Length: 179
Image: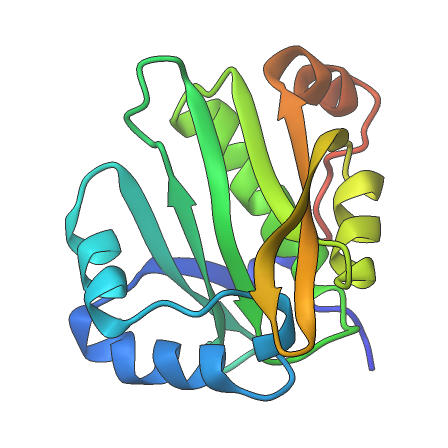
């Protein structure tokens, strides 16, 4: 399947009326092992509280819902913005890469972040590889810090600094399909 172009991907602010679908996407068996799902009230808070940005990912010619993303720390005085969550229904189409690049642009250009960071479970090897290929640097590991079905998993903390992002832009590494 062809990768979508960046013009066919849109991040629109999540509405409270979207939350049933957000919860369903989180609870999907293909996504659940890789995230720690939230209760509806947590999503409601993220939609309403200005420190968060909660978006529905729309993709394709019809702009159908393809997932959601959450940024946290958007008003952080230290300019450290967290990619709290990215959950996509469709895997292996390049949509994750486009979303990560759109979110990096938003973090650094719109929110004026100094540091854009995330954590990822070690069992989520696909996401870890994507983040590394997108310039995120491993800072450390929080050993066995999250409970999973068969025990505990480790979180890998990764970040990208504004000067690293700008260097990637200068090298042409931040281009989006269709740019």
